[in-house]
Length: 293
Ligand code: 5RP
Image (tube, rainbow, N blue to C red):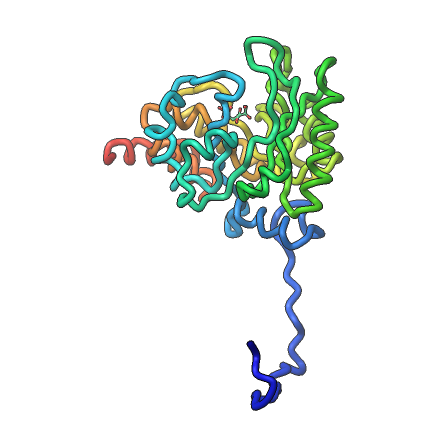
């Protein structure tokens, strides 16, 4: 307890020195509250402005896909190389060591699988996200789905309300759908709808044509999903072109954990995303690391 008497009198007021009011480096986030900014700062590197998220939430819609059969063996050793991890609450509790100390993009929507209709989803409780110390909450949003667009936008809206209340940002994920056409027109519309509805970050697909327009018209950072497994050099090329077009990082799964050498791949992706390595330099780094591991 502070003493009531005998205290040193306050005198260092710094007259003439203005109190600093720092800007905030994450796109569209400069007017957000402290908790939201703090969590975004944990995800995005303030030097590069970018992030490498490692996604391994696939099991919630597709079961134990290749590379995710034993996540304790395949994913846990990669966590150190990621800026942020994206997974379900099941995986987080069952497999991820709480000592990892990585920001978590928590998959907060749950529902139908690839065996039926994707995207018929509900949300987990907000208290779960708080209890698990989520740094960002990730719901699927199925723009253009005749059945589930309304439902998933309502899910997003509810989460943004709750996230703003408790200081946890929302990563809107443009949904994987069977009939999805991944062109810039669709991706731009989907990303913008998510941002307009309050998503603090958008995860979507890269497209070769017009991706810079997708990024320019989206007032929050875009991180790209890696998509299906490609040869390593090609996947590094996708990451490079996305970053050059203005993406703020990748949220990559299969192109990392299904790689011949996942630990080398995630580090090579990191060098492309944070250091601006070209795909050729990234692939050289991948091969060097692969040879040394
Ligand atoms: C679907 C997701 C995945 O996390 C996402 O697709 C990223 O993984 P990949 O790079 O393998 O596409 O949101 O559940």
